[in-house]
Each structure stands twice: as C-alpha cells, then as structure tokens.
Amino acid sequence: MSTVVSNHPELLAAAQQGAISGLIGASALPPSAARLSHVSPIDLVHLPGVSALTASDYDAMLSRLAGAFAAFRSVPAPRRGQLVKRFGELVTAHQHSLAEIITLEVGKIRSEALGEVQEVIDICDFAVGLSRQLHGLTIASERPSHRMMEQWHPLGIVGVITAFNFPMAVWAWNACLALLCGNAVLWKPSEQAPNCARALHRLLQEALSEFPELPADIAAVAFGTRELGSRIAEDRRIALVSATGSCAMGRDVAARVGARLGRSLLELGGNNALICAPSADLDLALRAIVFSAAGTTGQRCTTLRRLIVHESLYDVVLARAQAAFASIRVGDPRAEGVLMGPLISEQAWQRMEVAMQQAAAQGGMRVCGGERVTAGVPAGYYVTPALFACAVQIAAMREETFAPILYAVPYRSLEEAIALNNAVAQGLSSAIFTNDLREAELFLSARGSDCGIANVNIGTSGAEIGGAFGGEKDTGGGRESGSDAWRNYMRRATNTVNYGSTLPLAQGVRFEI
Image (cartoon, rainbow, N blue to C red):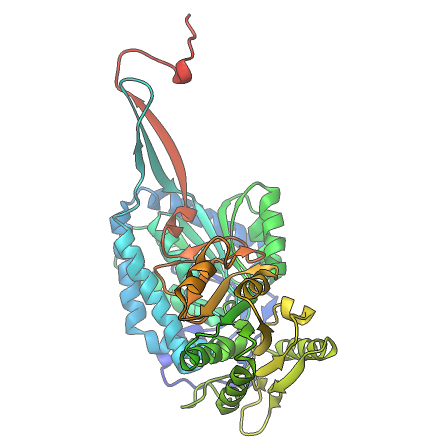
C-alpha cells in the first residue's frame, strides 16, 4: 500500500495511527474485520483506512453518548459556547493541515479546501455569538394572574450523516449548533473522507481537555457503510438525524426516521439554474457562471447545472462560456493555477458519460468539454467541464448529475425563465443576473424562484454562514447553519405559571366540583 506524503504532517500523522472503527471522547475503538478501503481521487493512492463499527461497539457508543448528554444538557449555554469558541481557535491554528487532508481525500483545490475550513471557523464564531441568544418567548395569557412562556431545551443525541464533497463544513454546521444547544453528537462521515473526521474529532477533544468539568463523551465518530446510516436512521435513541447527500439517500433516511416518528433534517440534491436577463452585466455573470458550474469539479449541491439565457444574448453568452471553460486548467489540485481537480471516483466519471450520452440523444448539442484528461495529470478521473446547447429544457436537464455539465437553454419572457427554473424536482439554489429592479424583485417574490436560495447578481454557489442553508421539494426542506437553524437541535416547551389563588380554565370553561 502506498503512502501519501504530507507537507503538514501533524494531523495527517494522527490519522495514520492505524485502522479504527470509531472514536468517542478520547477513545479509539478497535478495528473490525470489515475494513473500509479508500483512495485519494488525486492519484488513486490508498489512504489510511478505517473499518466498519460493529453492532456491539455501536450500542456501547450510544450508551456513552447518552450518559454524556445527561450531564452536558445542564451546562449553561454560554459555557458550551466557550467550548465551541476554543474548538474554532484550534481549527484556525491548524487550517492549512486540515485543508490538506480535504484535498487528499476529496480532491478539492487548495483555495476551496481552505475555504471549507474557513466555514468551520465561521460557524464556530456564529455559535459563540448565539450562545447568549437562545431566546424563548413570554406570551400574554387570557387568564388572570397567569403567565405563559416558551423555553427551548436540548434534544438528546443528534446523528449527523455527511457526504464527501464538504467533508468538514457540513458536520461543523450541525455539530457546533447541536453542541451549543446542549446535545451529544454522533457523526457518520462519508466513507471517502474518514480522515477528515478523525482530524476534526482530535481537535474537538483537545478543546474538551481544557474544560475538565465537561463530559468528554459528547462527540463520537462512527465509521461504516450505508448499513450504518440505516441503523442510525432507525435508532430511537437518536433524537434528530441530519443527513446530507443525494435525494435517493434522503428518501431512504426520511422513511426510516419517519417510521419511528423521529425528527430528520435533510439537505439533499440541487439542480440549480441561473437566469441571464437582457440587462445583465455579462462580465459579472460570466465569472459567476464559470465558478458555479466548474467549482469543486461540479460536485457541489449548489453547482450550476442549467443556464437560462435570454434569446437576444444566447449566442454571445454561449461563446463566452465556451472560451472561459477552455481556459480552465485541470490537474492535480495541489498544483498552483489549477482550478479543477478530479472527480471523486470512476463511478462519478461513468455517470457523467451516461448523462452526456442521454443529453445528446435528447437533442442537446455538445458545445465543448466533457473529455477525460489523462495527459500531464495523476492517475485520477480528471475531466474538462462540458457545455451543452439545448433548444428546450430536455429530460437530462431535469436530473442532477454530480459532475461539471452545464446545459444552456434560451428564453423569451421572464415568466418563461422562472417557469423553467422551477420545472425540476429539486429546489436548492437559483440566481438571476439583471439590472432591472422589477425583474429582480419578481424573481425574489412568491411568483418567482421556488428555491430555498434565490440570488440576484451572484451565482448559485458560495453561501454565507449567516443565512440558513437548504432548499425545498426534493432538496428536503431542511435548513442548516445560520439564521434560526439552531431551533432544529432543540425541543420547545410551552409553560404556564399560575401565580394567583384561583384556577380559571382557558376558553372560559367551567368545571366545578
């Protein structure tokens, strides 16, 4: 088995201490017979492996998490916020090492990997501020000498299932808020990014070591396959399951959690569109189009898949997009100047090929790209971004393919463009480029985009921590990160206090005994 050389060895070395099946507190659980082999998409070199958690070790992990929660829920929220703050400081100190692990495991270019680590830091900052703002309500009572109020309490154990494309940030969005709210957190990372989880867990434990009064077992990492994800979804001991991944995965998780009337938070696929209106600043739009379509090699849930261009600009925009795509340097994501690294796997490349064949069969014309690059790159699955011209919105455009394929279609009226934007099963991110105030406001109105994210003069990718992230329809309806997303990780209690000497009933009911 080959060894990956690191320029920032400290965290990677910790991840290379041998195969394990899970982590809880400061404990590493021994490996099982079911080894989970994975390779770097950069060069297909084997990376430090893990093994699947056994059923008995899983049950023991859940018991330890439950015991830790029983103590942690009584810790004042501002103190929990200090823990998250310290974790953020440690992430900041090791951000280059963490970014390198992301690059090695999922193939992100350096700047995008660093950007993901910055998301972890940002959500820590957000959570610290939130730690003194977990507000309830005081409600006017219809009964004299009564007061009503709402309180928010921790849920219990929160299960977090993450995907490969954001192997650190999505866990942090969930875990930092869940911990702040007083919960324990169980993390099932992607099988393709176990060392990202090992590295972050190590830093969280380092932070916890500076708070000896806090239980060490409030966070755990469980390695495994889809079977483990199903077990988490079906486990009544887990109060909330937050799952990020494909729509198919989300349907399975939702069904399993729903069968036990549990809570789920789903952030699933996107099939995102950008409308380019006649008044658009084309230079601005082009930059947004290229990053949104090619960033992370088209493997973001917010990746731009559909470009809806006014017929008067269609040929110009396609020509400029073609030239921009041709200028993108594809190669080893660790190299300077590279903007697109590899697809995550051979299966991803196969799915891209199938999608392009289907698009061609349905009348789409390939303008450029979509070739596999083999010269001057390592042994991974490197591709050029593909651009298709379509007279109408073909069936292939209605399906999300996790690859850099951009379909362009013309429109005549804004109402037609909005209808095209909304005419897919997913509803995550959307954008319009226009300098017409009426067009912008219509796009943002109830008659406009039906997505959870609707942007004006900014692309579909690149959400900020302060806003709640998520979408509608098959995207799952969940919201993570900013705004009031913290409420997902708490339960609401309505309390009524009678400070009088009589017992009047609500709605004027009389019940004399």
